[in-house]
Image (cartoon, rainbow, N blue to C red; front, side, top):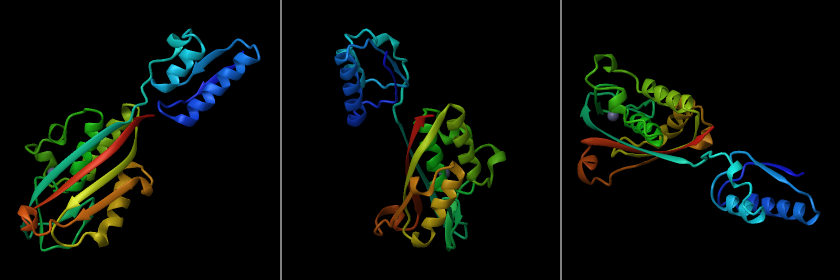
Length: 224
Ligand SMILES: [Zn+2]
């Protein structure tokens, strides 16, 4: 008997080639075999097993989904003189900052929405209503920690995070590394899985007139 314990991803050519060769070899030398697939995804792997085993193990595959789930979040806040500017958990010296109920960190707010969005868990406004005095001036790291716990408690892991920030001034470059480190610490990701990108608005529109700051965040979440 040949027992195959695999972790085969759909469209994973190498894993599928190994799977096919193993099944063929077992057949050529006259072994009967059973296949135990661990978390086998649907797709090409399944069709190989079905073809080489006449489909007799098709039902034995657990219906486990390993699909990546993509989350996407967006946030925008008004800018005003004399307010503090906190982006990605980092306080940035600036004559203007965000107007908000909490600390107005558009990067972390968009990150929360991306994490919630990956698992269809609603949005930041549902979890932390801005009408609730409890969240007045709250550090947005609290919101991220809440979202990270929801992801973990549902048996998922965050794979990576990619941030895009639009701010006319000040220049974000000197603070990008600190923002990456803060997000990595909040989410438990290694630094190389956290990307922070920033651009000006080329003086166009409301962002170019320093009336607002925007952030977009994408993330991937997978089953643990
Ligand atoms: Zn916000």
